[in-house]
Length: 387
Ligand SMILES: *Cc1c(COP(=O)(O)O)cnc(C)c1O
Figure 1: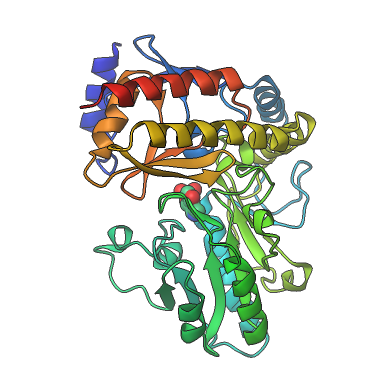
Figure 2 (figure 1 turned 45 degrees about the vertical axis):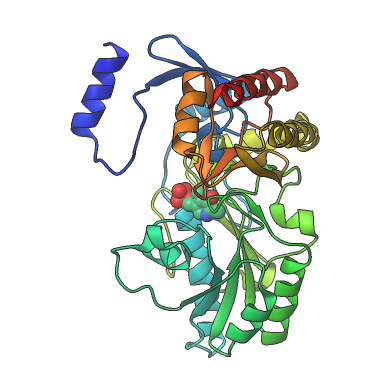
């Protein structure tokens, strides 16, 4: 079937909640993918910061194949070998955040503070699409039409005074990203996370880190919070954790490990052997191939190139920002970001838009210097050809 015929089928049959371009990607290798017509693209978005090891990685593929032959699924009625750790496993980011929110509430319930239900979260945040996580997602376009979302107070990201104002004895937790990814790659201002830590400590509340986009080495440290030297009480992981196999995880301090007793929370597919084997392969490769160092090196190259593009095209580009392999080139407000995205795609580079005007770069963590440089040369040419 031709690419056009496949696109027509998709338009006719899939629920129209996405806005796909007329492209069908069929194969990948490292940081490159190919469409059904045989055209090559540099993948600088990695399936929204998911394909940690790029495409067709032999270690990941072998681990998945081997586990598929042993056991794919058992349910959480039993322990399984690839999945024994101090963590709660689920299947996506939004579920990992639901686990965080339920952990916080249940913790205070068991301490006799059942009315401690409120969470402080931030404008521009993205925490997922299920109703609990959506309530924390401080971006009106995601909440529109879904009714009241109680028990969350949103304050401007970085505004410590407002956080202090909104704190109260009914606040169970503050939920925060160390870099707001979907919001447009907005790093926490210096000292902000540290001050949140102090505020929750004074109030006896919890600090919850959404590390779904910033975790698993994306910023050059294993967790985004580590960039700031701050420890959360519990955190959520998903996206890059299993290199593309659906997974989510909630990790917490040992003191909170009794907060969700047997029967209080669960997931049929959570922690299944297949996803766990994939996650183990990703984590082992991260360490064995020194990918944190690689992210720091590629991140420095990317930052230098983006700074250069911002200087070279001042009419198009407002700024660049981010850390490691989570960075953005922020286009001026009068530039049609979707049109630029389309031109980049035609020229063979895949990126995403975040927060309206930011071209977001989240390539595989093992992208080579050559791949990154070649993709940025194309971006330079495309920007140079814009009116
Ligand atoms: C993607 C993302 C989520 C939601 O993850 P899903 O797997 O799509 O449910 C939550 N928080 C952050 C920071 C994310 O980037």
